[in-house]
Structure formats: structure tokens, C-alpha cells
Image (cartoon, protein in one colour):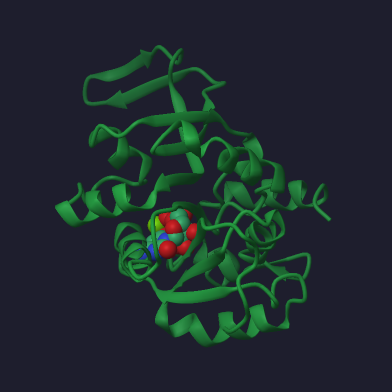
Length: 238
Ligand code: CTP
Ligand code: MG
């Protein structure tokens, strides 16, 4: 997909949308990123937000090869984003592989920059949140939104139920933002394949990390219980 650079910005946004959406497939009949909420595919919600923020030189969509054509077509038809610099890269079998593919595809970019990584399955990202996290990149190598736990928390395993102290515990969300070269180096040196996000990799590698207060609305559409929430919250989004 063509077009000139959006702004003077040098940072790049990556939208993760190459998952199989297995946990919701039987309820939705389509991968959740393509589920139409009020007539619009779910991935378009955060994509429009990223485009509208004007924080990025370009936006990279990480897509399964089988969905590439469909995604290009949807993007082309969308007036909000069709004039932006948007490209597509193949996803992998796991989220880690998908992120690594995205990072490798950005190697030719000149100089260093920050890369924002966001799950397409978190539709209710706001322009304010994007601007806020991007305005704080000078403070750290890695930044993430996260949510303090509101509910009590216990672990239930063979030893029985053990309550944990929820103070100081956070749920990790996206977007997450990284110094591009430093995150790429972590992936190139070999990462823990069990890590479910990239901020954890930055923490384990000793990068300077900054957690920021997130929002309940940044929840990830994951299981059936999220669908009611999704529909309710969509009322508040234009
Ligand atoms: N993702 C990706 N590539 C993968 C796996 C996940 O780009 N190989 C993306 C998903 O599209 C999603 C985000 O990472 O936006 C978070 O993943 P998750 O919620 O687990 O989505 P899925 O893997 O699609 O769902 P499921 O685990 O139920 O199959
Ligand atoms: Mg998954």
C-alpha cells in the first residue's frame, strides 16, 4: 500500500493481528480481529486510532498470509486510514514469532526509533493513550500500560487455595513501546518463548522499563465473557 509518509514522526506502530482467534472462533465464526462490531471489523478500531494519533511515520499490520488480501481490501476502502502509510507483514505461529517478523521487516529503516506494539484484539485504544505513551518515550527503553488489580486474588493448585497480596500486582496490557534496536537485539539473542508479551522481555533483559497506568477499556477480547463487555463498551465509541 503506497502513499507518502504521514508526518515528520520517525516512530512506527505495529498492530498484531495474525492470531487464529481460536478461543472465540465457535462463538464468532470468524477470527476475532475480523468480527464486525457495529458494522466495522474489530482491527479497524485500534488501526484508526493509531492513524489519527499522527504519532507515527508508518503503521505495520502483522497479518496471517491467508488474510493479507482481505486486509488490504478493507484498509483500501476505509477513508480514515487509506491515505496513511500502511504496510503488511506475515505473522508467525505464535505472537512472539509474529512480533519478531515485524521487527525484522523494519531493519531497513534508517536510524533508531521507537516501535509501538498493540494487540488488534484490544479495540478501545484512544488517541490520548497513544499520544501519552509516545510522549514519555524519552524516559525509558520500554513502556507499557498496565492495570492495578481491583479484585482479590488467589492461586488454586494442588496445595489448595492460597490468597495472594494484590498490592503491587498489575495486569499487563498493550500498547507497549520500545526502543526498536534494543528490542530487536533481545529477539536476536534468543528470547523466552513462553513470555506472552514484550515488556517482560525488556524487564528480564534489564532495559529501563516504565509501567504506565492503563484503563479497563484496554481489555483484550479473549473469551466468551468478553463479548458482552465488547458490545456494551462499543456504545461509548463513535
Ligand atoms: N497474534 C499474532 N500472531 C500470533 C498470535 C497472536 O499477531 N501468532 C495477535 C492476535 O491477533 C491478537 C494478539 O496477538 O491481536 C493477542 O493474542 P490473542 O489474544 O491470544 O489472540 P489469538 O491468538 O488470535 O487468540 P487465541 O489465543 O484464542 O487463538
Ligand atoms: Mg493466542
